[in-house]
Length: 192
Image 1 (cartoon, one colour):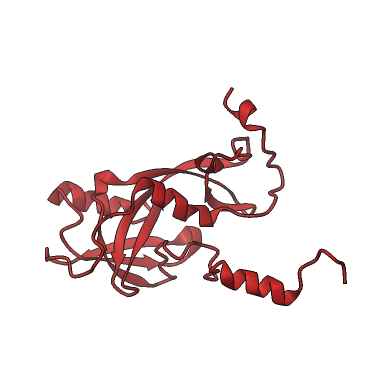
Image 2 (image 1 turned 135 degrees about the vertical axis):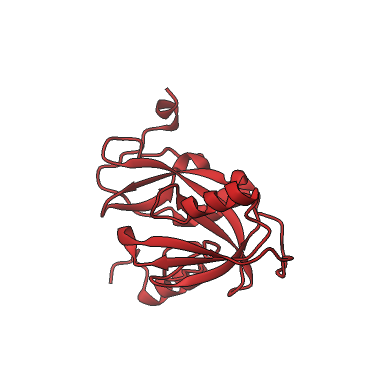
């Protein structure tokens, strides 16, 4: 066995210590399985969403935050990689009894359109519980919301995550491998 190659036991131990949830996503990110639903309470108003610059490339790079958030040179500001703004809201997940981050692009294949309609008609999305339903998976997912009547919040921890905390949590989405075609420029070159 090569000297500097970690053993399987060491690799497994490291994965468990790092809190690998199996999805490759931070535990604080709200995940709704295919054809599943979650009952949530939004803790941040619709117009208080935190915009997050994300990069991806089909079959090469799953969506991840721009590395500039972490003061690192970002190799994905080149042709072939998409740069898209996603939006983050803090919400309470009743199933896990924990604060989570809802992170979606503003597309018709996300709950954002329905949330905007709720916001426009009521002026708020934080006064009621909302069931987020996901139908299908991947690029064929459709999202729907079912709105409960306004009611007092029954969870704990009602304060939304601060923006710097959201960015810190989303760092768990950053892939720790070299991506073909992505070459990081020194930070000084990127700013020019």
